[in-house]
Image (cartoon, rainbow, N blue to C red; front, side):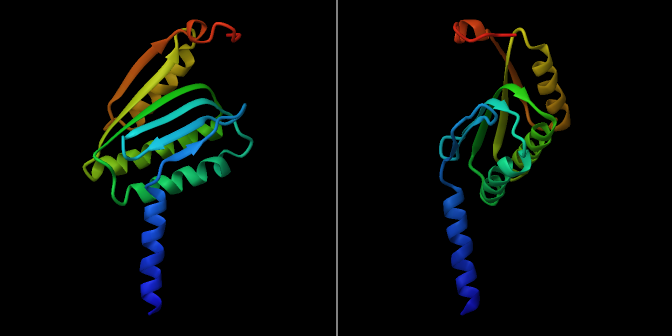
Length: 154
């Protein structure tokens, strides 16, 4: 009987994990919008939290559940202004989870978006594309001033 409760618990965790994962952005954490039904996953903004491990732990846990039965496709759009070292490690863990989904038949792609004035962020994307070379990357350049004319761009 105890085993039956364990099975039910696992099914509930999996069902919960398949819902949309959404986190509002802050000044130090990015927008997170992962929709397993459409396959559209977005990480956008700044990722410079004091405790990146704590911020990303629920995201990585959600992805672990998703990888048990991945969708047919995932397109991860990454558009980051800033990324600290701790966040860069966690983002790599996100990409590793996508590699796992790919190994189970999911078509995975990363759209790496960067401001035309930010060559460093382009290089970061290229580094990730080499670390997870089985995932195709598309590099998309944009102009932050045109997108956000009132925002100061350094």
